[in-house]
Amino acid sequence: MFPQTRLRRLRMHPRLRDLVRETVLSPRDLVLPLFVRHGKGQRVPISPMPGHAQLSVDLLADEVREIVSLGIPAVILFGIPEHKDDVGSDAYAADGIVQRAVHAIKETAGRDLLVMTDVCFCEFTDHGHCGIVNEKPGFADVDNDATLEILVSEAVSHARAGADVIAPSGMMDGMIDAIRTGLDEAEFEHIPMMSYAAKYASAFYGPFREAAESAPAFGDRRTYQMDPANANEALREVGLDVAEGADILMVKPALSYLDVIRRVKDVHPDIPLAAYNVSGEFAMVKAAAANGWIDEARVAMEILTSIKRAGADLILTYFAKDACRWLESE
Image (tube, rainbow, N blue to C red):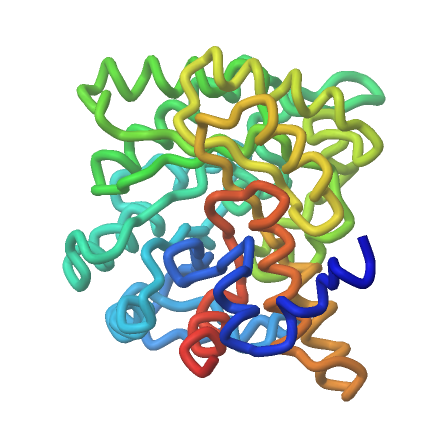
């Protein structure tokens, strides 16, 4: 009781604040997304995501060396192919853009950098949807079960290329079971899967669609990605993925879904949980900082800390490199 109990006593010295801090962010918590494209000598800036660019495979070596030097333990790859078609065939080609990028990164970094690969089709299809489109009179949608077959092909091709973690993001029903079975049959039973288990149909993905050149040519993705209003449904989605064999779970986006992160962690405390601090969340901070309205470093670190505090064990974020530098300067 006041005045004997004064919680401010523990805030009076910066080193004491460090000692009693409940949530500690470190480079080991972070995964950096990378966008790879065809060609040579290509570094194509992504305008709504300052500091990020599409990189051709030949430029990955220098990028990877910097990432490793900063202490970032993992990257996740997104590919932009030279040619797109209605089934996204480059996504599962042995010499596809992601497969070549995995080889290049492994040649540079070996086991010093964990390589995760996003397994989906929106960047690879000419219609921009996450699988095979089934067109009916007056209606077109992604054919769930037909898409499972090519998702398996994509995942196995990534594993053959040397990917360390397969990360299915398409929100197809049954995708984790199908991919797990396919990986095991191809003798990749040791490769873990990080499932985008609760992926919402969010407006925060806008800059990513420019970065990955993946905007849908018609309609939207609301028939397969989750309604932002639903949290109980997220627990059902997550539960199904756990039952199907997911090794790591993910909630995407992160900032507007901290409550979902917390609920998932409470229900599945023993399963590693990732959260994706997505492109729109990154771009908002960058734009406000560029206008002098906020302190970019403080706001970004507060956001990342809040995501970890909510229950995330690893954070996919475009702030990864900056965050490492800010942490080093503390």
